Length: 237
Image (cartoon, rainbow, N blue to C red; front, side, top):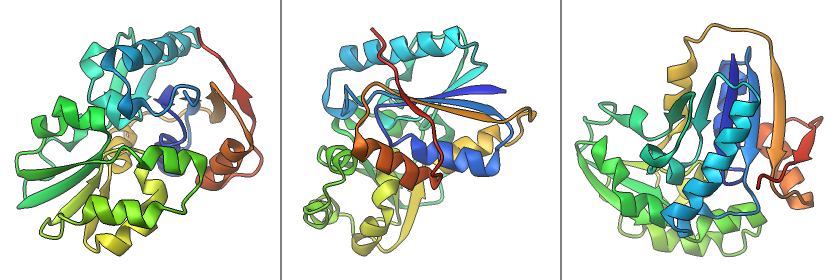
């Protein structure tokens, strides 16, 4: 099966990595819109425009289904236009977390504004807006990361679990553990569960980004743990 995966940058690579490990026999095309990140602080109209351009590109590549590997876009999925099946990373939470008393959710400002998580989680939730994390992760400048995380998580001590509501956040999961030493839930696990029953086919991987630099290339190789990668720049008007 031919699967398109889109994100604002490198965050969706955490989803791709899980899929390559557990569902390797598919043709994956990844697109990271690095020239427009971060999506979480832009308007809905802006990010939907960017995403629909990527979806059109995927459809021109005869994709069978598309994974919205971005929490911000997933929270606005109803505004996306596609002829193919769209799988987001938030709706698979439905019914999966009802046994918790309270869950904290780290997410981008726009994701929180939509209240998308409240549609699929019936327990008490604490929403944490994290505008600084995506820029820190994409730039790989972690000098202020601990201070930022401590501020974001200081009021979540009474939560039973923490959802990383943006696919970028698992990249700094080890640092998050220092401030939240309880269960941490990454959204990629639910996507993998959904796709694990797909009929396998031939394997391939193509990586596209709207902007490429040395830091990006280093991050991609580090996240996917693959050295020999063909990373192409593709600008979508």
